[in-house]
Image 1 (cartoon, each protein chain N blue to C red):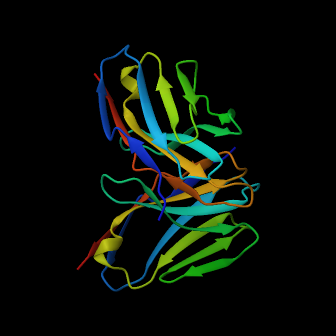
Image 2 (tube, each protein chain N blue to C red; image 1 turned 30 degrees about the vertical axis):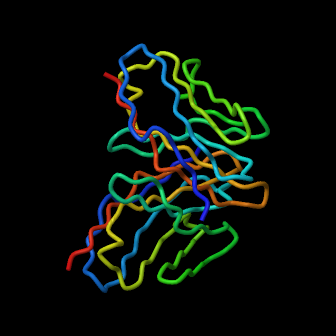
Length: 114
Length: 110
């Protein structure tokens, strides 16, 4: 069964450093998403991406964040200058085209900013 | 705006039915979802229901939707120890995002 994959599973970085979290969505899916879950809190939407552009973003997704689909398979989230409060589990998700309503999540990347 | 509420904890005996409840505020919600998260794992899609349906059944899982009261429930029949997890309710208004509740931790005791 196809699945969303994410790398790395755990990333430790120092405050102020740039990190790139990588995701491989399910092949032939058209909608891509990033969410995050701070320990003990709700899963929060960050951004959605469709047709090679951001379709919606939350207020969390400020200028420090960017997303990219550099080729036909990867979907990345970049945090330019990490802060302590960026420490969280980051989930990538993907969904098929219009008329498909199932959003499938990857296993997550745990980001620890020290 | 979207706001999804769930009770935080549920303890159930093995073999009994579990009922997890959720309320949402946005009447524009088109799809409502249940996800399961086991310790250290990602979010597993369990089931979803379109807002014009009242009920959906999938093996041991039954979803009930009361659109008037904006209330969603997930019933797990014959609950097993492997059902111990956090269950998240989520709503979607468009193709672009899900809004999640805080999750209900279900503990199955022998």
